[in-house]
Image (tube, rainbow, N blue to C red; front, top):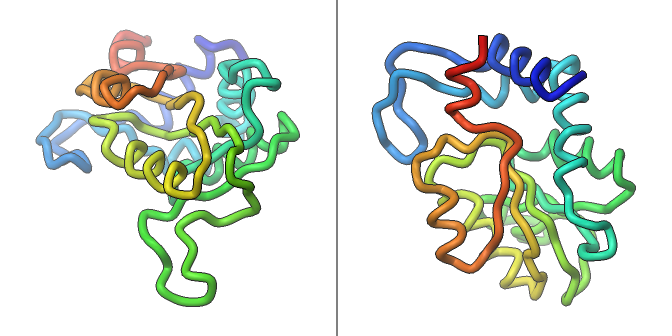
Length: 176
């Protein structure tokens, strides 16, 4: 599937118009429902393929990471495609068992690329990056599916990370 075909498919299945509130608490006239595109195999598979193409050179990172819950299907598929292992970053420690915030094998010093679904202000992915750094992992890049163009890139870059996204809100709004 080409990038433009994927954009059209993503818009068709996940771009909703109406009255919504974002995770950041802002009122908006549109919503990008990540669970719609992440649970639709005909969109999820090509999405993973295109995300894999945005990854840096494989020699520059050791592992992928995906914040729960939304990025987990993405990081799992990209991991399979690239043969790079991954960790899941919980929003908070689970409070039982191992009480981990990171799920999956990892070793201090590893370099990680974080995959995220929707980048609005960057708060969720920055929290995930803090958890990764607390585990002595180095975040080398962050890749989102959609940049909502509401400050995420600026906030992420202000913390010293590089970031890219497959699509932007402008792309979705202007896509036929």
